[in-house]
Image 1 (cartoon, rainbow, N blue to C red):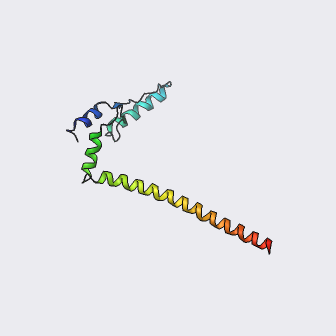
Image 2: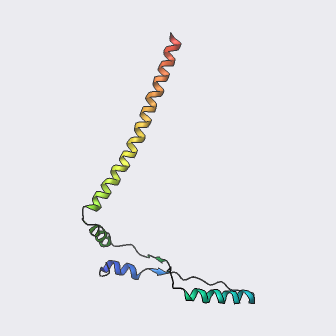
Image 3: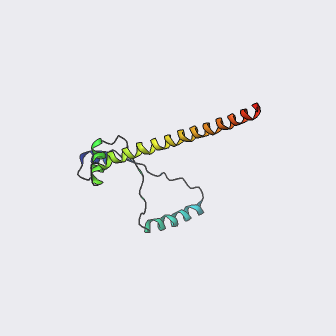
Length: 117
């Protein structure tokens, strides 16, 4: 991925936001802040500033990610499984609505037949 031109362009266009320091008013707080800053300087940085992408990702990067998954068939397979999952979810909702409607109509038919007899 490091050698990929599209990925390099994406990484170059990311922006790093810098943290703003707040001003301190009291002398005691200044001394406490200095000791805290000294402690912070001694420890290695565990977190880095967040990066934000500015432009869109080129399609070649997506193709490289799919290729890195082991096979180019994995991408279409995932999309097919997502479509089947959504279709099954919709079919389940429609089936529940249909069976609830049948049950309600049976109850209504039974009530009408009881009134007629």
